[in-house]
Image 1 (cartoon, rainbow, N blue to C red):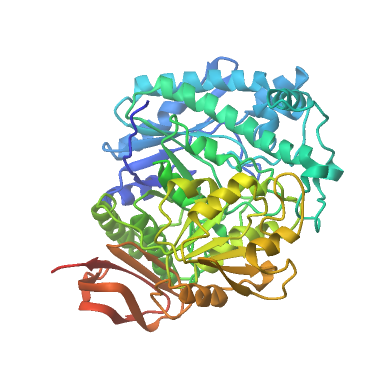
Image 2: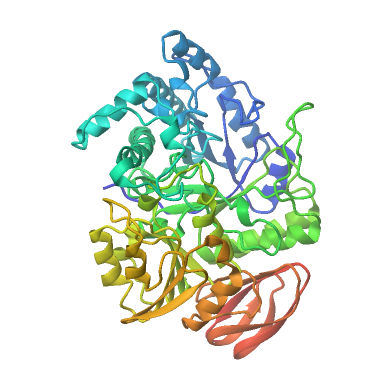
Length: 621
């Protein structure tokens, strides 16, 4: 068994060599820098890197270009340490060469990832580059490299945009996968069938569509198999203390036409791998505006269960953000913060998310200008000091709400239905506004985590309940004097067929109940929503309160909390009353370093508009 390295990183990243910004971050105490020696273009078709590509031909590498990208940083900061991304995507010359050999799009990994991963020639060529790259870096920078990130697929986040397409290699891999599973070898499902589903054009019936359900799992398995092959080789080439990370597991973020065939549903296989130390995602794009609750794209409770690290990518757009990639191409400002007050409140929210969850982060400068003002840099310096102090002090979550996602049920979903985004993504965003913290787990975590403290458990997409899953529910969830909220057709499938009567048997409410129904059961309370459109933060807040969840604020605003720290974020400001689950001797706001209350379980605090405050809760003076 490989010994795990749980070192955390507070770091800086940019696509461009932003040396001035690197100096500013160094002065703020941030010396870890992520470098991306890219060989490929970005999703807009422009260059990721201003340096020449490293991978130039079969067995031919421009290591001088590689070295310069690191040496240029060391020239301005001799104390710099590096997180090194390895671009495994297909360079244009390799795509052209493999196409002439009859491989066509089955080697274009950026948009057709599962096709490339099923192509042994692509895997072998890419593996040679991986070995050469790491071999050089380990000789040249043995003291400076802290971690390697394996990057591939759409935006280098291991996302597959093939939407079920298959060529010769993927078709052959599909046939081999079926045979290995003891299933009849059948053709790849047609696009017409992939784009529709039996039940309300949303849920697949295994009696008619088991081949599609299998094909979804196969597509994820092909990608995960390739990742494990690459990460195993990387682990063999580096010392034990060097970490390996990657972007993966976006089950809370990928929505319409991306959740099912995006390749991330089989994330649990990677989370249990001994070859990978940590995972990364940007802060969700779906809850970035000021006043909303942000959050992770991955199930945080699952990665904690597997003792994996996590790195929170802060790529939020500030008013000084550079949108121009070159003189012809620019990128839209996704949910920009409009002024410095927004920047201060937004960044404090993101830093608090990382501090309270005790995870790594990087400030992603993208194409420069994000962290440009002196006030912003002062905030980063303050945040780094707070993060340094609290990132390793033991903390316990105070969440009493659990959101349970189920990637196995997601295999049964029609990716072409807009309801996909309502399941995990929108439910998380509404829970953000309850005024109490929550945690996100995967269904398979249930027997392995302690759910005793959770008073409200939310299942937004538990469409498939096999007899084995029902046994888990009865043993760990449905007998603990708590409220369990199900949304849209829970248990309609038992893994063999669809039957709407199962919904009423589980929840006490018929499938098409017009509004929220709460039905007491033996030892627990069932709540059921037949329509995602009827779910809102006020309803969730009321349900949580009635279930006995401790509500910190009466307002519908984001709250993160551990036994040591509490964050409250608001767009509107004003005097807010905050109720704590117990009395504390001293309550101190960390950015102002002001004691705001003593010897109390509730206090009033004045917030700016907008504002984020993070409090240290001390049980004694």
